[in-house]
Image (cartoon, rainbow over all chains, first blue to last red; front, side, top):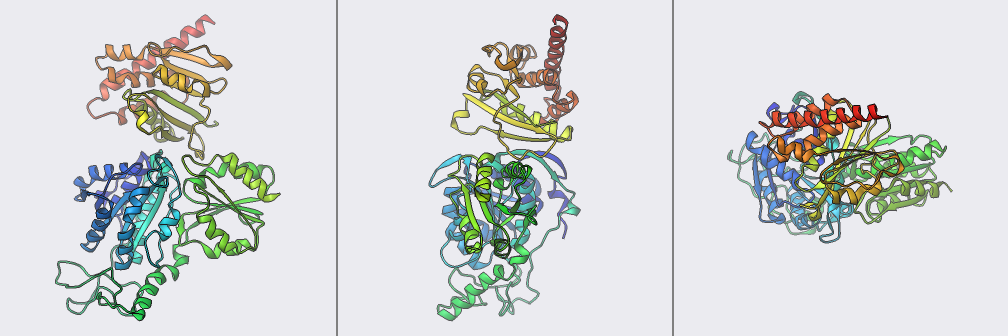
Length: 384
Length: 187
């Protein structure tokens, strides 16, 4: 399905990353936003609150982040594409209900504009230290989908992609950006609506009384519409396909296996990598979001000196591109992870390298993006 | 053209951020270049020194922060003092003549001053001082065609204030052109 023309501001704009994310959500057909403003994500809520009344959307400023996350789940079950945005402290508060979204299999999008942490940390400065929280922040076993834009343009595009994946896999999707991208203003090209491909919600074709919120032996079930005579029950308790609690090990295995299989069996579809000069590379720099951008001058400098260095930009960080990293580990001398933390996604890369090549972390505590000089030094260390 | 780093500094409320926004928009939307704008956020930016940073380039800007600006636009003395030492050699200082007292022009820094606040007051709205500065900036820096900047002013200011702002822009621009002619004549 194509985007609704009334939602799409086609043209070239000069927008910051947060506004671009808001426009991406609107273009994707998001019609419900609940949030509790927090720096550096506030501009998303601000833009949505101004734009939604013009297009029939509902914006609610909630009492806190727990309620915000709960509200977008409710709105999604009510039939709307929904989203919220937050940053570190709010992300922590949303974690319980994020898990509820995973358990209920509820499509929605949550944006984390990362700042420096822990705790209140650096509200106005960038970080990428919530990446493992994105992966494991809610309790229990589950898989997540997380995307990382490197610019306002990608903020727009990946927000649409996030909504599409959330509908396709019937689960919450995370957009993990950071203060630098959120507050950076650049040209954003918004294409005509007919060039924006949207995945719409799949609803059951069964009649009321014959349909359940999940289908037996189905990996991704269609949802049930509300207000059309379907009466059903959903719960955060372990449940069977009928949506009623079943508290035993067999039901737990069936339920959790399926939640994980939705992502695990579709890793190839979800993996989105952009590779450059990897074919002949001795060393490959792996990174995501803004870090994948600031590494490029360092890579170019090393290349000029004849060092065979390539780049992998992870557009999807979770699920981790395990297969590709394992392949490369057998071919290259070293893999370098560049991220604004002390080595969170690095641990995944190191695990997948499994000792078959050297691995390096080029990280720091956040508060600014990487100095390309530090990336260059790590490349030099790696080829020694 | 290599990347040009620009820092605009002044007091919160002078329109520093809008000034940076308009330069970036002019370059990227109306002059087919790349332009990345970043800004100082934080409680320290309200009412005291604040700044906007723009990098304009023919290629994609990869590193988003300004480190050694080739152009410093100063609308307050505090802002000027805070950032004067970051100016690169052979760079340009564009300053508000009544508010900023430049301390010499080491390393071949070229300095251009305009009493932008007075111009703005004469136009009846002190608030357009940033747009007067922009017009002046357009004349003395030669960074991009003046029409690109003018168009960006027209599409960035609040609806209904276009005429006033364009007038402010033109006055700043003309003052800059005249200043350049005078300095050519005297050399």
